[in-house]
Length: 307
Image 1: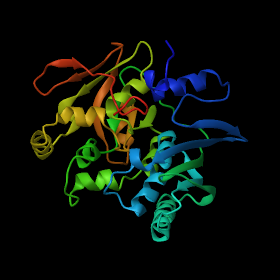
Image 2: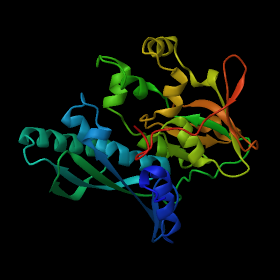
Image 3: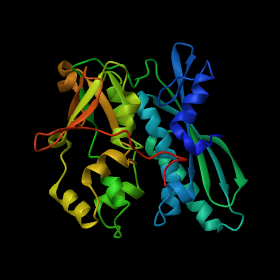
């Protein structure tokens, strides 16, 4: 039987590349020594039919292309250095729409304090935007350097974008989070001196927890600490959706998931929400509001295998 890329999925494809390269760091970004500091680099490709909802404006497409890359810099606690843009598009795309995309890119670069320093254009059947973000970090914030007893926290509410993708109306906080996501770059710069590890939440909380898990360690997440509102539960129910499914298995939040020692928790000058703790159980679990404990499945958005 001949395997296809859809048989193993994106994460296994990335692991294959990493295992065959001596110079790739298995973290949110690449890390390259540069004098007394480190060059932090990351790249993300966004395809119109896969990553941009039909009701997303061209401006927001451009803004998101920067956000997804800057979010990786934030997860490493890196200072933004520069942004490269490669964009492919149909030859019959209206010029006004192209200009709106570029306007979104430039406004995002201003918002995050990261200059646009170069790029490329090409022709394609649909809009494809590839961004590359560069940053600097003397001591990058890694994703698996936590210890038993550390607290698990997030920088804000999660699951809002997941619900926003399902709603028809655009005039609500959920749609805003889905269509106009923002990276937590300032929070990342603060966390690099206090947190013990960090990553950003793009593919769902469950997927990110499994991504940072190392042998011999586990995580216990508490539903009551997630701060899920009654409105969120009611809207999910009206759409015949499981609210915990949306929170754990969809993603697109671009919040930071981080660990911090109990002693350093009070030193955090940012808004955060403690949602659990690092254990030595070697499993990832959720304590429900009713007190029952269940395993969290390793599911989340993944290219090639997701419908």
